[in-house]
Image (cartoon, rainbow, N blue to C red; front, side, top):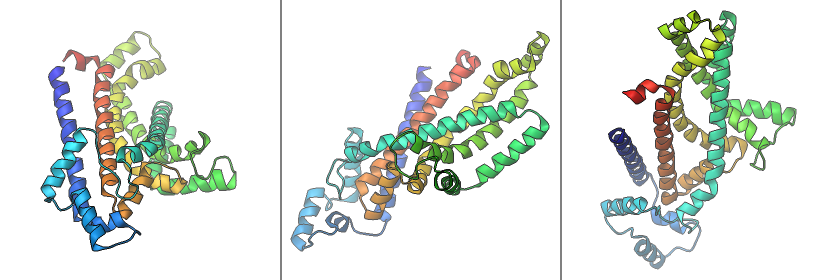
Length: 304
């Protein structure tokens, strides 16, 4: 277990390093000048430019700047925003909770709907209707789902706020927008897993002991069908992180998506790097939790 945990931590650190390095290289290759980004609409002169270059260490070789960034990141210092002149951790921290809240709510919606659909649509006609609906939802771009939900439930019926993050009611439509595609994918995986589990010898034995079909389904088959769904859910978290950029724009919500878009458009490199590192760290953390959940779901993995 210790060796397995060590390998998982090492793989997570490797993912973080690759993500940060890729973002660093991409931003260096992007058009625009860092000094121009820092100056913005302020006064411009050769003296001011030389002071900025000296203050930010932009005259050093790129490799030294990269090593310095990695060393400060390991210590928890992700730099200072070029435009806001504030520590990046403060800029990110102020917008982290709205994005995290949206991602968790969307994941919860996706999990609950997927389990309900997989368990309740066992009849052939119900399965066909559910499969077609899931395919439509998965194939539809999330921003289009959000626009439809806004048009119906906000503009037409006035049940939910159009934008903002004032209360839980403002979280319903964005969570549904991001959760429905996840539910469609997870439901298909769960349903296939249930079909395989119900044909296993343990299911036949449970029926022979007199258990009803619903009891066999919920108490035995569902647990075995969860393994591939949990693995898929860990991967889906990366989709949730990327989806917040568009969904927060559609619903006018604060969060890391808005911060990332603003930082990219203005060339605020430290903020962009911090968003990438935070996103990669969240992805690694969720997948690590998913790996640990395997041990809780299937006792055979603990014995092996």
